[in-house]
Image (tube, rainbow, N blue to C red):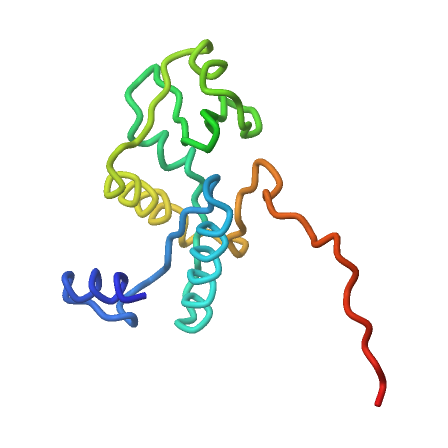
Length: 153
């Protein structure tokens, strides 16, 4: 939130000057995506403006050079990719590279700007609340320990 305040201040804007909030919905880090989407939805609700979710693939497609497939790095030498008219997938990097040249955005500011540009084109359309784009389940698993016994007093 302090970073958002700083960005608004640098632009000589306040929260009430916003028409909409754009947010990257992933894929990516499970916790980071959940936090950013929740924050955007909360701010939008409080400000009575729309929150617009933008997938990383939609954003990267705006800035990827012609002929390169947008790709988002993942752990364990894997990447998230989405070929035209297909669902996003998590694949080994070598497999993705065998399909064609991958485009990785190495400048966070460029990725953020692309998200903002896509959101600015969509905000006036009736949008559902943004939700995280999960390509795979979270690594976390429920505890195998038995829950404690609660005693009625």
